[in-house]
Length: 142
Image (cartoon, rainbow, N blue to C red; front, side, top):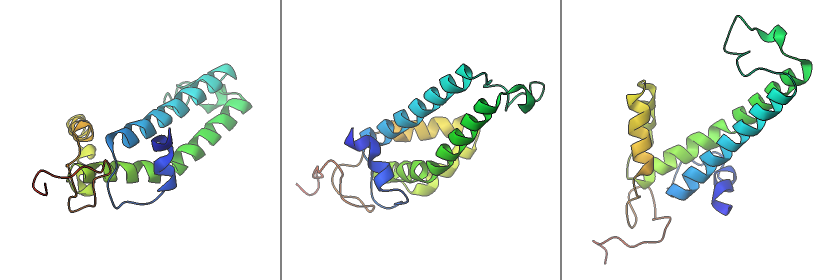
């Protein structure tokens, strides 16, 4: 559980490395927030399609639903920097530059490449981005 909130403690720290577990637990937290707000907005008469479907429009949403959308938007805006930071630190753990995150701008293929990078095990031992967060020693150093 401690690893889930580590990116919040390292809010804008783009240096160093992040373990796979830290990265995926933080994204699980973000998905959990998404699910909670989706259910709450649905319960108060909002529509998840109201913001994406112009034919539905914002006028179809109730006041509480719009308030929940506003709160959700502010929370996600606040979590944008830590999610970028943990993603870049995760790339550092696989001995890749944080600039690789820009490959995500390529539709479908970019996201697929990033997911593969995020799933790979980190470099054992220290690399140019810092010490191993798992505390392993590289084969070359042993």
